[in-house]
Length: 459
Image (tube, rainbow, N blue to C red; front, side, top):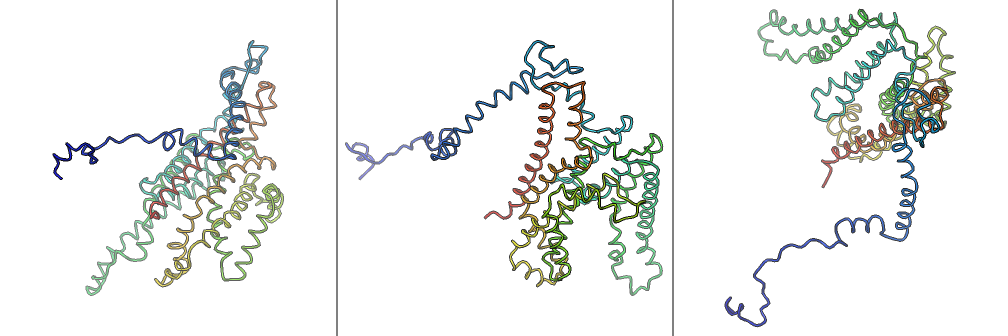
């Protein structure tokens, strides 16, 4: 049948024109479909949606009115946050936060010396960005800065005193000595060619073990520059000793969390490997430590660290009152981290171990190059969960007399200058926002790391 016949046929059934694509029905795609599939997919889901909607409708408007609409944003004392003084309903007293924010950040650290804390904050922020930025240059240099140079610099700047200045001079001399040693050894291959026999000149001298060992000249240079700048500051502005009893606020919270996070991960790896070791003594010691620490609450560990650590050392070497909870928090977090990492090690197939051994790798090479990178990638959610729990548990150090961020807020609540009915709710709301933003930031970064590391595993 020809095309002309088809066109003139009374019941033509072949369409020659292409129909335009129509939008999907609302019941399949779009907001209505999303609401149906996610909020009202069944009786139980519908009931929970209605309950949550009722809670939001009844509570959120009051919270918005209290913390935003009726809030007081400026004022010099409690009179600005009293309803009978200003003649209207009073919500959150944010003027109290604005007046006391420096105490929340620095605690009782001397006002004239707070520039030292600011330098440490800047170094900490630089180190965090350097380590977390995926495309940052010189990542090894950044790791050395974050894990070695910054902690030493923070100790020298925050504590100060004659002991810190003597330690700083020792570090400068040590770093300068390493730089001189590197320069001398870097010329050894060139000098050796002057007296070596011609038959040995074909040997690749540039690959000597000494030269491979002394490659990190950037690390030496960076350490020398940073310690030199601190020495200049110590000579010009002075670094008087600030006792740790005056430290407080966000500074102490970040310090405890950073020390716990930095030390708990490597200690957790060592404990996890020790628990899976075939050496009975090492395995037994690891199991005893992990089970003992995990079997007691953190408060007990802090009390033990505060009261028992001084008993194990001579009186003149007794740990500082801030160092004691730092050790307790790090050991407590390491025990939990060990179990998280052990779960990742058990998830690695046996073929990975056999393949690594077939390549001739030793135990530590196998763990460092093959097993641990895969195990740590698997347990990233568990590691970050432990970090978040550790960051929130820093508030427990108040029990042993350490003024962390939450303790500074509680200390200002008894100040008659800002004693109002809404001051307490405002202070705790400010603390909640602070902890939420920090924990939420860690969670979002871990999700991004998971997606990036899992990109090569998708099929």
